[in-house]
Length: 507
Image 1 (spheres, rainbow, N blue to C red):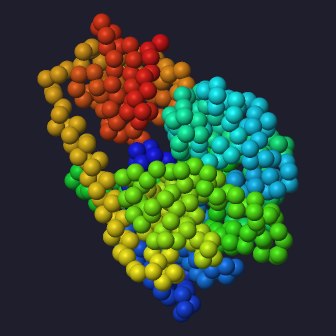
Image 2 (tube, rainbow, N blue to C red):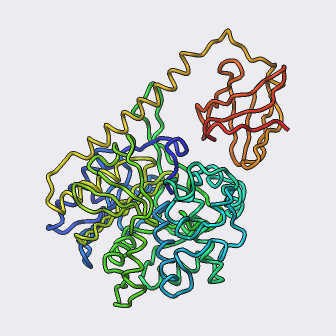
Image 3 (cartoon, rainbow, N blue to C red):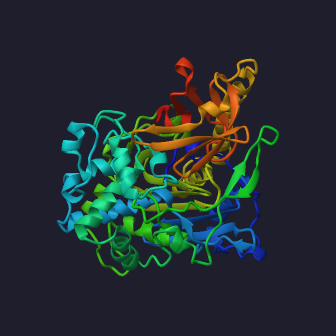
């Protein structure tokens, strides 16, 4: 799933070079150039383990891994190692819906409530018109509101209910706003129509017919697999800006999620790529859906504005749009259909170049890294005979600039702190219950002369910053600033930057 940069924090790992001891997949001689690019990327980014699949038409020309899937005990990263797909799950959901569209059981432009009666949007106009296509193409106007599903202490139905109560961030069908929860709703609509759970539909309609033997739908299933990767993140400090590598706990989804809970191996993704390049035909020759309907999932639906941040990630692109579970853009004059996935400790990139019959899948067990983009671009350039570019260096410079900007902001906060500007109230008087009409109730407690903010599943110790502002000392919200409103000598409300400045009113 594509979470915001701040939402998933920043972190990394000690690089372990591939060796016979680690059981690295051995390439055939004619694939040595691909192996060299893979090893160079892993080494350059100091990634514990990385895998790559490259297919041309219906032939897998490379599927291998390098480095470690796990450190203790050491286990080699191979093309058979299981890792989470995160938001690359979305293309599976849109493909499932395409199959049902082909069969006449759903329509792209069906009203959502035809299949999910409980679905409501806060805007009456949008609520009356919203369709499955709107949900799948991120054009409802609903913002991401990741914290209404990520580590939430409620189920997915409640995440949908809360998210759809929020005001639209852009006019309905008037712009792109990424929302994983809208994809969750689309998957639930399909499940309701078929009277089968989404996970069961994925197994029966996609995994079994394609022979995706490694595909599982939840972390609980993944934990039963021995050859499963461990996730890592890079912990950076002012004294050690390059960071140290630490294991990162698995993201524990409460239930199978059509927006992002699938796990798969690189071998599975090679089969998935060939299925798309074939226009919907399984390896045994069976057609699972029409080429035209499958192609609709990769057809631009919503324009994505290429602002400064987008141009950093896609420097050779002029146009970009969201299809349904895929991003469509140009790379050095070539049509690319791709999607990234990121969840605690892992990053994935799945890419198609349909006109060249080229497919690329990259997986790694390092959190929030652009190494997947670097390797994907390098393989595209190599396979299409384009002029080479040092994509590792390019994306590392982008990451370094972003990290420096974050450190500058944190440093600015520190230098601006005024010890002589004490809190308006005694600390105990900030304690209480604070509520937002959609995000729900949180609590600030006072114990041992310290404040702690608790909301959903998060626990955030606070330290005084200046005036009525407090900084989170550690944990998920580390360095975020919480501000209290204190009119007339009493704390009446609090806001957290990570929730886009939403005010929680004191009960």
